[in-house]
Image (cartoon, rainbow, N blue to C red):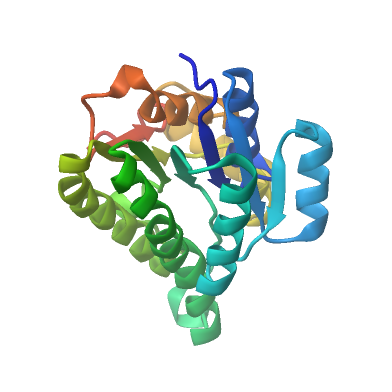
Length: 247
């Protein structure tokens, strides 16, 4: 697998799955740009990944910020060959205790962010008749999850969007797929639980492979769907959950 001289954009690329993916793409020769929500996260990721990476602060839920970030990538690296829509946000809270402000943030980040970023990147891919998009969704969007109703709705929306765009873009030789992580050892898992160790132990008991994923496990699947080895795969959702979800 090689991505030599290909330009890759990873949203939410400063930590967890996004950071692990950036490392792997770099190892395969890609020119990598990552977007983070906060300057501190972007700077930390820049230090970890090296100066050759373009690390920018972009709120994917704001269309003007996405447009500006996209222009900066093209000015430095040229057109984007691979888009990884990884940015996400959620809390684990009961639906009846949530506010419209929280719902808006969840939908802006998880759904509108994918729509804005994909819309920015696709025209140049269409012009070149080449490109891949990998959307990081969630098994919550496939089977539902208590405490994450609106997040699940947003991720389900991305799955539907991906399948629809895969049909539209196939004639332009552009492939669009989803990676759907199950429980993964990321900061969001720690932040969403006051007793993370107990939660993880409970998850492991339900997972047939008896372990939760590491970010690198998800990143490997992202690289597979982004690369030439999967050239005949489009419109699909790959669940990486240790067998927890089999649909």
